[in-house]
Amino acid sequence: MVNILPMGDRAVLVEVAGLDEVLALHRRLVASVPTGVVDIVPAARTVLITVDPAVLSLSRARAWATDAAGAAPPRAAAAAAEVVLDIRYDGPDLAETAELLGVSASELARRHADATWTVAFTGFAPGFGYLVSDEWPFDVPRLDTPRTRVPAGAVGVAGQFSGAYPRETPGGWRLLGTTDAPLFDPAAENPALLAPGTRVRFRPVGVVSAASDESPAPIPAPGVGRESPFGAESSRPDRKNAPRTEGPNRALAGDERTLAGAATEASAGAIRVEEPGLLATVQDLGRPGAAALGIARSGAMDRRALGAANRLVGNPEGAAAIEITLGGFRAVALAELWFAVTGGGGPLRLAGRDVDPYVAHPWPAGAELEVGWIERGARAYLALRGGVEAPTVRGSAATDILSGLGPARLAAGTVLAVGAHSTTPVPPAPDAPWGAPDGDDLEVELAPGPRADWFTADARATLFEAIWTVSGAADRVGIRLDGPALARARHGELPSEGMVPGALQVPPSGRPTILGPDAPVTGGYPVIAVVTDAARDALAQARPGSRIRFRHARPPD
Image (tube, rainbow, N blue to C red; front, side):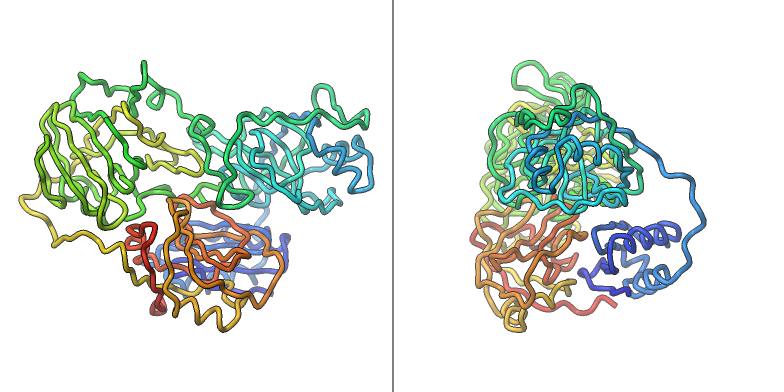
């Protein structure tokens, strides 16, 4: 039986009986993708379909999904790629997990290595594949207390799945061993080694500690970190542990860094960051179409402000610019440039003199530009004529603060090169009326979510009647809201399913979190509603203490 559920105004969630049906449906969908489909994301019992509604309406997407669910299996495709992962069965949970399952440690390691696995879907981190096998008979409970740090290369099991951690993150899976395989390479054409559909075998190497049935030595966790506020299988990684791109991202002497190999203090078209403020990152329109690999879209939170800044200096709307959170940013031009600042409002000074936002200005070499602390709204966008030149991952220079993809967050001494992406002259006047956003009191439209029926009728009414306050836990990954608890009508655990930016996930506390552009592409908390795509730009200007009222959006179709 197929159940097609709403997921905001740009996606639908197709629910089927189980994982076998998910895999079959995913194969059918991939074999018949119509123009306008952005992402197809399989999960434990669902397939998420995201569309560009200007090309493919949601009603047509639902009809396509329904037809695919009832269609005959596609013609036999070429044999799936197979990956062999060398593994040392030295995990800290091997002996305890074996005892829990009623087998010896050596037997558990043998069963794991003898099984042929398939990547069913990807999950909370880029390149993390959920592996399934008909030859794996165990259903393994997660750890009661998740680890705050699981090292890269750890191989674990949970439920019916196995998986290997591509990078250091928190996690609650039981760790059986370690692999040195490069699981995720952001610079590669196909960055995820374990993409959906790939067959995987584990090959024991070295001394397998499970052979003696003694407790193996624990895997050392590098460093001491903070527990992620976004749950057991999310992370807010230190940049030193993030995937790195050779060449343009490497550090220069001292504290000075460059995001383009040709950018130096003597070169034309560059700026040097003197002070990044609370957070400054390179952003463009992100990297759509890679969610099936576990890669979030990322990109500017306020896309409207980004586009306005770029138009003012003659760039394409999606050119890379600098997203400045709450202000406090200072930079010096290393050559004569043009710039514009849009978005959140606050003091804006060039060489000590006040200048207007939403206007293109010449920026003399050696002059300092200051984007002061933002007083209205939360995020400002600094566009440079020609665009920021930075390394790209999957065609985008966007910084994803959760996964570590893209350039590092900007720091004092970072040198940014300016590209040659301008396509039109600098306009003589602003292209539209402007004003600082009201980030204190917002009305935000919500479209239906797939799991509204998990909540009581009173909770669904409260969502729209209450005034919600943005908590201090608000960033590009998610915005936690303070307000009344939303009571559930259904309890229990929801299998992981695809997520979209703007989804209102409701954890057991009952207080929703609105997922941001850097949030994981799958999640296990029920989604009661989804912020409409258009409303996400206004929401980007919410700051801690902002008050939000939700209202119903008009149906998209």
